[in-house]
Length: 361
Image (cartoon, rainbow, N blue to C red; front, side, top):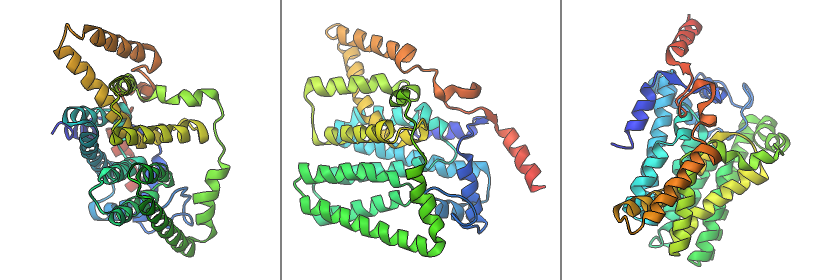
């Protein structure tokens, strides 16, 4: 219930956040029979638009309709964040992590239709499968290949955490053959899917899905490396506290190592190799950041319950959070643009309804 409440509240909040509305239009265009790449520009794999197009045909086209689909994906990611965090850090930290994810300002901001909201649950599911060493190696390999084929058929950058997980399986579990097989099956499936799309859509598919991303350029401003400070707010200081707790307690379990490796890989790609100031890119990493932040939150809660023995930890943690939220990762950040509050939007739903009525007329 605690994870469902923010999703319901967000859908009934009187204002929406408008960003990447082009992709909303893309889903609708597919639902009325138009073709990606040929009838409209589409710089991604089309699986999500195919699914969303069928969904809109079944349940009708409206902002609320597509928002319900997106919020369902976020809710699934919340549940899976709890499941993964419980394997990694135990039940108390899992509760904190899932709540931190579900109530994140960045998650509230991307409430309508964002492809990262749909690949996040797949990536988390992949991490859960990766940590399950009771599954036979070849079964694990096949399941991972299927999960990340689906994820990359939505957005190709899902290959980043997949590569981390394959390396983890090969090193941590010494399942080198399983990692190789999983990578090979995934590559063959994605190649076959790409060949099908090329047959359907021709060169436009190649140019828009692959060539565009190599030619679009990159933001070389030094500030892009610190861009996460403008979107993470409360998650950042709790993440730092979580890392501190892990390092001081030397709690380097396999699960913790995997989670930290995924966060590091996502940052290296989006913050260094392909830097862009697009908040939605970090939705892929938020569940994993939230898990470490959950460990930090529990460190503070446990300190408060054993005070005065740990009053220094409690006071230091509170001071760190205050410094972060005032200065380093301010609570009033990019998720408060255009008069929005904590990512809750700035365009009245009534205005969206009036515009829709006018277009229908």
